[in-house]
Image (tube, rainbow, N blue to C red; front, side, top):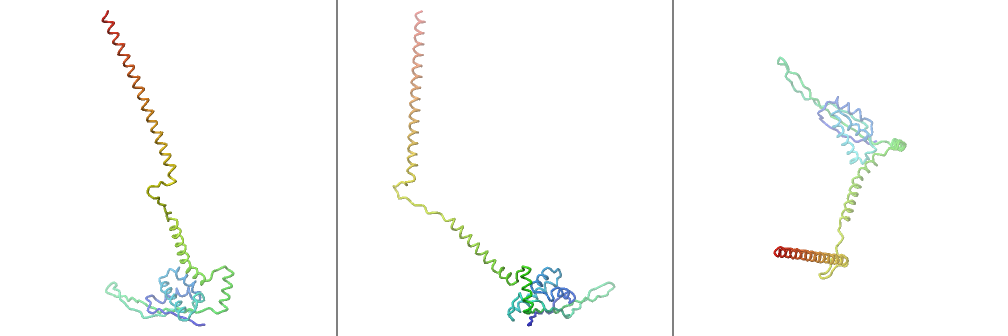
Amino acid sequence: MPETRATLRYSPTSPYKVRAVLDLIRGVEVGEARQQLQLCGRDAADEVLKLLDSAIANAEENDHLPADELYVSRAWADEGPTQKRWRPRARGRGTRIRKRTSHVTVVVARYSDEQLQERARRDAASGRVPDRRRRVQRRRRPQREAAATEEVETTEATEGVETPVEETPVGETPETGSDETRSDETGSDETGSDETGTEETGAEESEQLEAVGDAETEAGASADETEEEA
């Protein structure tokens, strides 16, 4: 089967640490291998994850192989040049520091037709969605969300449009306001009649008070005349 590789040279990590990460993904499907590396707590897992993505991209672009049919066939780490440094210690001594490097290689290959059929039957029995279908769903999800957002905005814009108001020519009263005008006129007439009745009542009361005052004045005058005669 055709194989595609990607190589990382002069990685600033010792081969001992990288090999512990490569053992997790060797012989595993690329999708599961990426999940393993994303959840791995070792620092070398980040470099190996980038290297695996590069190998998958090379397989898709150069060899035209679908990513959901690939697995990690081989992976190894060779020792690179070691940088030697010195650290001062007690009594004027110096201790050697070895900064090791490594060359990491990841090789991906396509499953055989029999293995692909077996995996398809296994996925159908377990109800698992293939990786290609998941990628298509992830790709279409933003499009559906954008379409839903545009639909909501269109609905809000349609509901926010105000209905045009018909303008009435100058000198004409709208038909709908004729009843209100009549009611206003009737109310003004009633108000005027109430004011007139109030004024008449006040005039009668003032006349009665004047008559009572005149009677009291005449009674007082007659009493004075009687006293003088006596």
